[in-house]
Length: 122
Image (cartoon, rainbow, N blue to C red; front, top):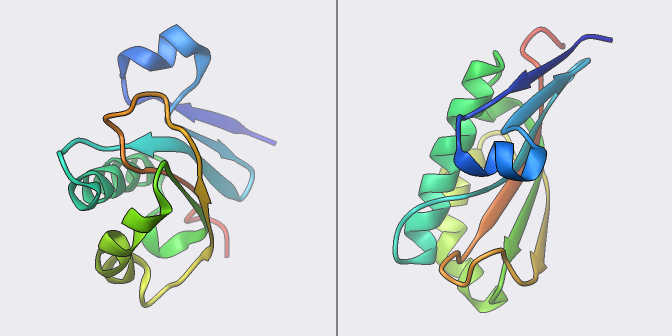
């Protein structure tokens, strides 16, 4: 099986020892991703944009996402993301899980992790 690692060039990748995405066989695994902004909705959209870029670099796209996990320090904020997520995944809904937990920095309101089919996969 061929494995391709895709780096976003972020400082934490080398510091912690991970990459933004890994293409392994028929799947693209995108690491937990946080976004920028002051609100959970802004961070959600920013994280999705970063994920979409990683998927594009891997030869995939958001329509190929089969699994998504949302991590939030406050589950009550998740509703503010519903319209953004429905706009992103509405026509191609993946299996999804939302987990309430602490994130690496209190400024982050949401972290998103996805698994997608590689475009070459059918």
